[in-house]
Length: 195
Image 1 (spheres, one colour):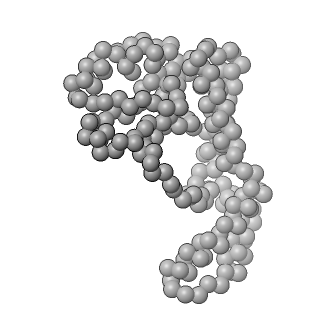
Image 2 (image 1 turned 45 degrees about the vertical axis):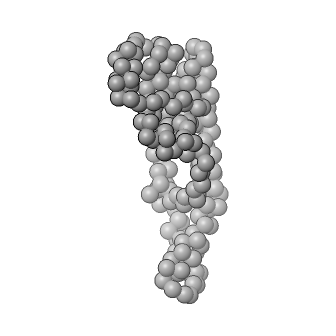
Image 3 (image 1 turned 60 degrees about the vertical axis):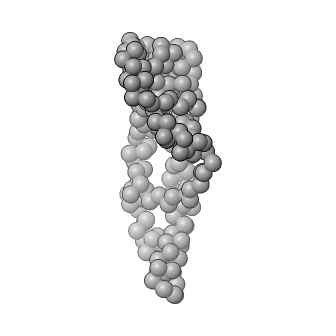
C-alpha cells in the first residue's frame, strides 16, 4: 500500500513501503481495472498486490501494463502483467472431475472412442483422436449446464459488489449476497475441478 487511497477499513504502514521502493530503484506501473487487490470480511479492502519493476524491465518491455482481473475464490485479485502488443493463446480443453460421478459417462466415452478410426503417424493419430473428444463439451452442457457460464456469473456478481464496495459501504443485503456468491463459487469450483 502506497497511500491511504489504497486502503479502506484498515490501518496503515505506508512510509516504510515507499522507502523500500525508492531505495530499491523500483518503478510502479499503474493498475488498470481495479482499485483494490485484497478483500477481507465485511468492508475491508486494500491495494496489497502490485508489480514493481526495475528500469531494465521497463526499457526492455515498453508496452507493459498491469491489469486487475476478476477475482474468483481467493481473497486476492489476480494481477496480469502483459506486453499489450502480444496477446494470443489457444483455448484449453478442460476435463472435469464431476464427469466421473455421472452415471453412463464412461460408457459414453467408450462408445465415442470405439468409433474413432484414424490412420497415419502416431503423433497425427493422437492429435486426431483427442480432437474427437470435443463431443464432451456438448455432453457437459447438456448434462450439467454450462458450468463455466455459471462460474463467470458468480465471479461477475462478486466483482460488481466489490467494485461497489470500493466506492461506498455495502448495505447488509449486499454483504450477505457477496458472502453467498463466494460460498457458491467455492462449491461449484470444488465440484467441477479439472484434471
